[in-house]
Length: 448
Image (cartoon, rainbow, N blue to C red; front, side):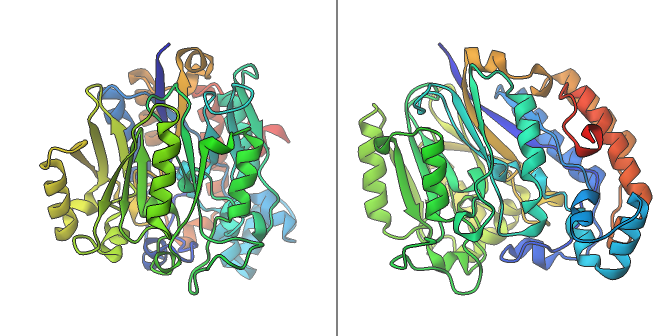
């Protein structure tokens, strides 16, 4: 039976704005308060999805959240009609209104952790929605995320869904941004690689001093238990605290893996050699041959990696066994990074080609190609059981492009977020989107 890695990209929401909400994310903070272009952002994301589909990769789409989140504002004490809630929040607590309007759900690498059926005890694909507990504006995402994933992967014979972990700091979980899977083939048993920034209960593990470590060891272990993963099929590794303090807020800002290959920066992890040996040993036991590609700090600094998002790239397998790296335009703009990539592809190794995409709207808010996609390994039977409305096709691309053109603004500032009309525009757009994607009622305004 054939198997595939399907990339489900997040559709950028209509309230895409630069609120500077993500402490520890250099791009998010440095572009705070600039005017954004939601329409351009959504079209850039759709262009990447279409390009990968045209290259022969399996591609899907994941719907955005309802924003502004008026219900979240009500839980914080704002009252009255929807318009009055927005007006009161804008007047009394603008940062809370900005947080309630965040379009950060576009970065669906944080939506959930996914374990394929070949790895799990019950032979189903398992999803655990991420609690994203470190940041308020993201912590409000997981209820809708769970409903959307449930509508996409509804067949209980093939798919199992778990609620987000307890919303406390000890179980901070940022989803697939700190999770990679290594395997010989997507349908075969593999090794799941969980990267954490700190331990909540064991003081022997060091922690960063400047920025928060968003993923805990205990959260990663809990997800592995929920998914029924075998101990011999799991490796835990600690992110280097010093790189977190340099703006590496997720592992996917400093490393990316696919198939049997890990592409990583020299300073990404603690106890790197021990970790690589464990990955190699465990992958060998399921028939795989682990390969690592280390980018030396002498060629690319951590600052280069953070500014270019070299590692927040998509590493994709070609039919001939070689790999393609999908990078943002910022990699070409960085002389050291581009020089390194030219040498990498010319060296005859496994990574043979680099393709560059313009994702400026997402990049300025702190998310690159890898942030925008949730990877789900599926066999043919499981792929056939996925809601077909969310699988990218030429007609769906055309429909979504026209939908964006109809509903999205081409400019968004903080003042625009205080416009009650924006909520009505967003709800109208999302109501239509659920029909296009055949999701049913997944948004609070459709349910309540």
